[in-house]
Length: 230
Length: 270
Image 1 (cartoon, rainbow over the protein chains, first blue to last red):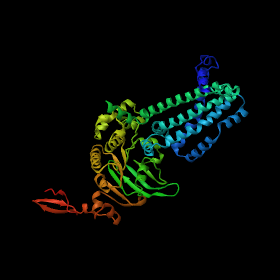
Image 2 (cartoon, each protein chain N blue to C red):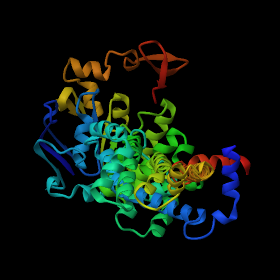
Image 3 (cartoon, rainbow over the protein chains, first blue to last red):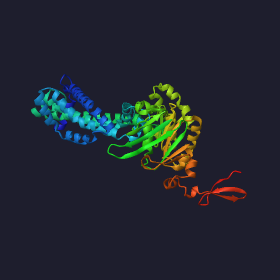
Image 4 (cartoon, rainbow over the protein chains, first blue to last red):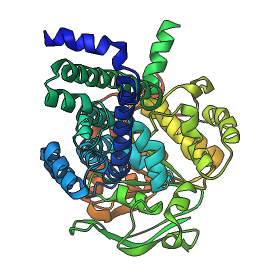
């Protein structure tokens, strides 16, 4: 019963402490997830927002995100590993590339879905292009845009196990080490923790998305509910 | 005063929206551009706040070619009301109305303090200030749109079929409201509509457009109804329509005006 043993492995307090314990590896795992997401967002969100705003290059989005999604991350990682050597640089780069399509698509379709008459009216009463983006399009696009962040986060946190391929970093260590030494409880235990982490992040981001939708994008729906109760 | 000086607009790709249109909109007057779709009326309106730049000719405001003005600054100095209200759905009514003064640099607090008076001016209950556009009826949203356009007290109001999306009774109310406001404020109004009755009700002067900004006739409502320039205007104005064919009938010692279908529409004053 590997599964039972896996949970026993997780439950063993001896596996949690120390610099290579589960707690430390969860922190590492979240950190590499966060950094990759940040780097990918810094590239993809502005580009997606600009393309959504101007409508220029919209055709490229579909082709580009499709092509990017087809790239196998493990293959990419191997390639970067060969080029950049041992360390975190190669897996981070692979994770950034993994996250870009979701972020780009989220930002683009969020902005693109804003009613053009609303953005046009904002321009016509004297908002500068930057003001139209920050005060009108972004607030209205946020739920869709955060949906993109949500998808990207999920992909990264699940795939960040690959960081252990070229570096002693993150929860993937348990998978690789367990596989090598045939310590399946450890391997499955590591996988379970990654799954739990992904689920927690998913629930958290779904809640953020809902809150933003109700408070920023469609505050009128919240008001209506409030007045119905009071 | 707004002047169109032989403006043309050809879009990239070759479609021609307006051909050599000239017009003078005198200060403090309401001029209505009326025409069906494809007449170029909205394009002409949008040339005044540089939402569209003419490919030939000039647009002047008080004698100054607006091509030399910064488009964003120019738009902030002109009130603009459009069909669907164009309100920001994620901002309260108060924030929507205060948008332009804030863009013009007025402190937010001061801009919001002026909102109740503006709402009262356009016939809105100031109690709506903290609601959102989606919670208001179409007619109320249009009033908000007018209040927003008036907020920074511009000399010029551009109105692009502002009452086109509301039902006839509300439209009539809004038209009356605009006439009352205009009597008080004396703005220079350029108004676009496809509804000739609306044009007759609101315009000091009316410009009937054929396609591509070609002027079929211009004049006061009286002039146009009394002497339509050609068949196109006659059709457009509906001179032959039963409701425009009035005859007088004596009923119980009063003189009634009766339309072509025999329906009474009014009483002749003694």
